[in-house]
Amino acid sequence: MGLFDFTVEAQSGHARAATFETAHGTVTTPLFMPVGTHATVKGTLPETLHALGAQIVLANTYHLSLRPGADLVEEAGGLHSFMNWSGPILTDSGGFQVFSLADTLKLDEDGISFRSIYGGDKVRWTPESNMDIQQKLGADIIMQLDQCPPYPATREFVQGAVDKSAAWAKRCLESHTKEDQALFGIVQGGMHLDLRLESIRRLQEIGDANQAAGGRHFDGFGIGGYSVGEDHEVMFETLGDVARALPENKPRYLMGVGNPTTLVRAVHEGVDMFDCVLPTRTARMGTAFSSTGRMNMRNAKYKRDFTPLDHACDCPTCRQYTRAYIRHLVKSNEMLASVLLSQHNLYYLLNLMRKAREAILAGEYEDFYREWMESPAAKDY
Image 1 (cartoon, rainbow, N blue to C red):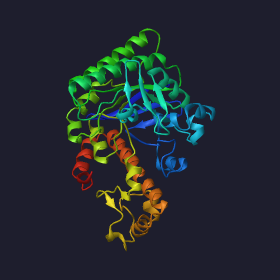
Image 2 (image 1 turned 120 degrees about the horizontal axis):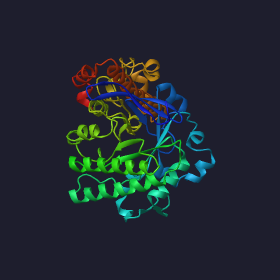
Image 3 (image 1 turned 120 degrees about the vertical axis):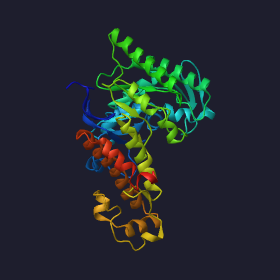
Image 4 (image 1 turned 180 degrees about the vertical axis):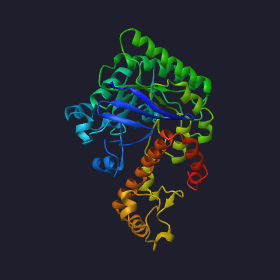
């Protein structure tokens, strides 16, 4: 197998089970990527992530470029050495974070200017400088710099974001030189199916032209601009058509989504990869995922409940600790509560994707999907 080869091993309906080759190992899909914004998944050691079954960890270019800085990370040997993670790493471009800070943002044809949230310094990014930053960080998979429109937004604004993202995709692809690093293009278009299909067509044409000139094509595609405030039912009006319009021989990555039911539904539509801060963020709020739905561990009904957190889960938290103890930790504001709940919530999503893969390989994803959608958990996510 060659670097960045993507092989679909089985398909059940539109759902796909595949392998993807990276410089730090082969990953299997469908997969969920824990988010380590600052080069750490909050409350979770790298060795714990490995034990839970995490294949890829995501880190954030915006934050790491500002603190501690890409040059320092490069000096440390790249993100793998810096954060002691031996598996594959994906960095997003930071574009989503920049465009969420609209009050400090100045956008032009060449790039974007903004102020750092760490001290207010002026920062200037172009597609070329963003590629340079991500190459210094040294992740296995990096993302193009794009413009992510908010929701709601006018069609005219979304069209402009499609145009800008396509122009910047070309510049990112032409300036990216790290041979052992995959570069993904990003599909934009808001909730307009025709604009999303236009975005895909333009990305394909950019990749084809660059490849014809002796360069590389995009190694995969992110589906951006969803889960930005719209109801998830609105997202699913177009997501399936968008996913299946992408090349069959490249990974499809739905960015920023971690709701369990949304993952199951998106796999059903042909999506391969996901990431989200949801499992660790909800853990810090004292909330656990479970086979029966969300559990608020502050609830008094758990005070004398000496049973496992989730009877259907075999993660270390569920094997070793009771609901009563976890509630005690949450109520006492002990950081171990966040550690144990993060461990559980991450395992929940990682294991959900493992089960989805098994169902696809067995040709039974339609049954898996139907059983999930009829389960108590589905109604609570």
